[in-house]
Image (tube, rainbow, N blue to C red; front, side, top):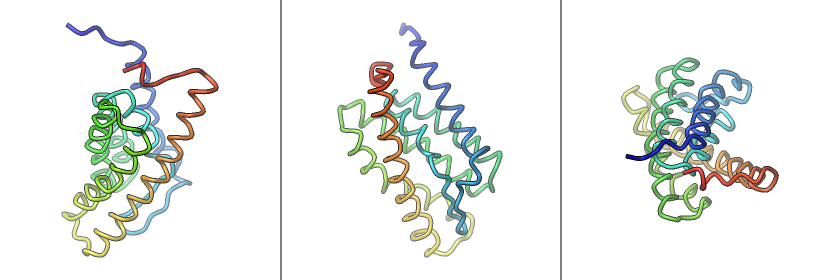
Length: 167
């Protein structure tokens, strides 16, 4: 029987709350182009949760889905649901010892492809599916990955928090 890690559970809960709140409160940071939308920093809680492990990343991905489901059209929430799979994949790679920057780079095309697939049932053109959503998601992923990396580095230095030790 595995004991519950209270610190990891607390971090996961806080990151899940952030994943829900960001779409609710940071609409002014949103860019909307057809089926593609980008809310700056919306992936940051997911990227940080990947350091805590697959379970935490999945929970934060589900939180992101709930946040976008409450504030955006269904197509955007369907795209947000793909965060569950991206977070899981990234967390598994991190757990195997891969560098955070590499994980962000490797999961970018996966993220773009999954979100592109998620919008196909909504009847968008292949240009919008592949270029607008797929490429747009990869760009947004890389920007938020950079923000997450800077935040993780700052937390590690200023508050002596090592999120890997919480897992």
